[in-house]
Image 1: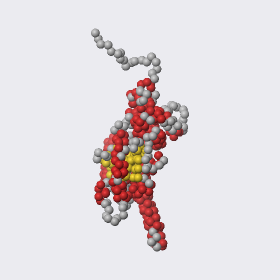
Image 2: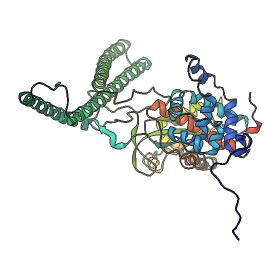
Image 3: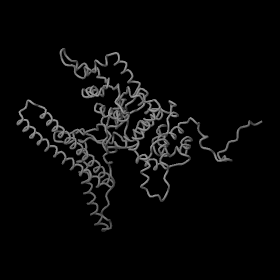
Image 4: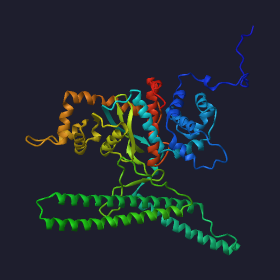
Length: 510
């Protein structure tokens, strides 16, 4: 006798219309994400739809698209094409979007267009966490992690190599042009003038395109170096003027004369650097116009964090080792946690004891030292107050940072590093510098207790983002876009913390 089984068919019909919510549990993450998105202020995003022509296809609800993005990032799905596929293949995603299936171009365009709005959404979600009792700014820890850019390190080239390659390609292009002209003349003699005469050999087009890309990247490096030199000279002139004004020992006439001469000299050098920067920018624009399409994206807007400055020599030209990536010019080659060199960005996060991110930003400068003060100011802006206790590793240590925390009334514990301490140990009778004061503070019982918490605050957060959430590489390019994507990632991390804490039900919709 044959065994009985339940009937199975892929063409099963429904007698009644199905309820999508029945396909997932009531406590599933999609319901939480949908509830959160409904409470957010979407006026900034919705305002972009007011200027559109009301005729034609009705757009998707921006709340649905935002919920789709947030849920996808929480699951580690960042590709717009994979997000589109999930609306068909993943049951929970299909329920979340109400069985709608926005094209991947719609998802990508929505994300690109509203990158700047993700900053305000991050703050809104942070306030939800605060109302739920998950945010206490009494003690915070700052750390940075390197996240790979959407670019290969093999697409980067140094300024010195650019100059050599440019000279070589110019010679090759000239030789190919001469060869093409000779071939045209020979064919005209044999077959008559039937060719248009404007065809270029494939090899010539490839070299010309590469030459245009190198020339544009070279010109942009020169522009950055000249601008950095101009900024340095202007800052030096201001510092010199302030120092002379405060020095009472200098004779008034001599001080004024020296200040005027020095200021004029520096102003001339700064003006020269500015002109060089403008000339390099024009050269870069001309290079991009010679190619059939723009081979490099536009420079992104500056962030609150300190950005990478192109190193320059005494003439204001880029150093031979100054590099630029052809795919993502804003990214830089950095040392990852594994010790490998990758094209990456430096992502910062200020984290509480509850592992909630209260401030976040991105820089393309690898060192962390100069990022401390901007991150503290952002924490104050987001939370309404500076922290009572601040923790950071030795990558953030500097005398200026210690003095800033002391002046702001922050009980800071910043590692000074064993090697740095041994090299700077003061002799007897010498005034206690910031390094010694910080070292002594770390040796106290309270210092050891506070600093021991640092390893369980920001470091696990980065581990959760890179592994369970699967975010170890940016999908977008350029500092402004990367900054928006990192804000979205930080928002998703905080939402997951709120969801797992089971406290969202206590948050009102107002």
